[in-house]
Length: 119
Image (cartoon, rainbow, N blue to C red; front, side, top):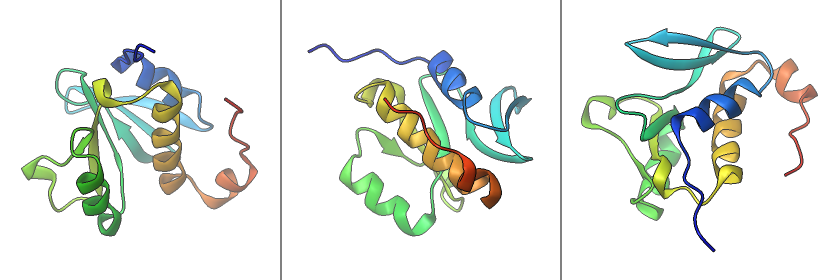
C-alpha cells in the first residue's frame, strides 16, 4: 500500500479541528494555540512540524524512530520535538501526534470533555 503524502496543510486542518485552537503567525510561520498556549508550529519549508514533547520522553522517541523525529540544536533545551511529514504513516498518525501535543497545552476542563473522533 502506498504511503499517504502529508503536507503542511494537513497539519493546519487537523490542528484547527481540535477544540479551542486558533492559528497565529509567529516567526514568519503558522503556529497553533489552545487557550493561549502554543502546541504545534510548522517551521521552515513546511516539510516538518514541531510539537510539545516532555523532555524525559523525547530522547526515547527520537532513538526509537530517528527517521521520523529529531530536535534541532537550537531547540535542544526546549520541550519540543520535530516530526518529518514524509516519515509519517498516515493522517491517523498525524492526528495522534497533534492530539497528544494539544492535550499537553489545553486546560484540564477542555481535555476532560473532549472525545476524540473515531478514525
